[in-house]
Image (cartoon, rainbow, N blue to C red; front, side):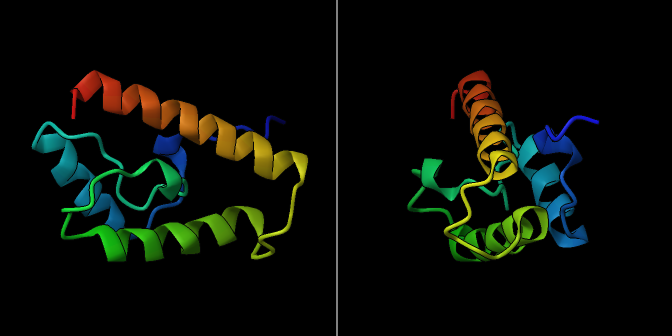
Length: 94
């Protein structure tokens, strides 16, 4: 069984799913509540605070709440998500 999850298969909340679909419909990268907030450079985004809170909840659900956890799963999942986000941002140009 693979530990790798893609961004699209993450267990987003119903609200996050709606916001992500709106982002797609507007031609933006569907980045809301993605568990890697360090890549976000959208300081003007009105959803930024809520987005980060949702991302923390999702990250804890996937990897546990121990911020000092350096497990292989945690590193692998974060690396894969970062890679996919970079691809999404470059594809939309936003």
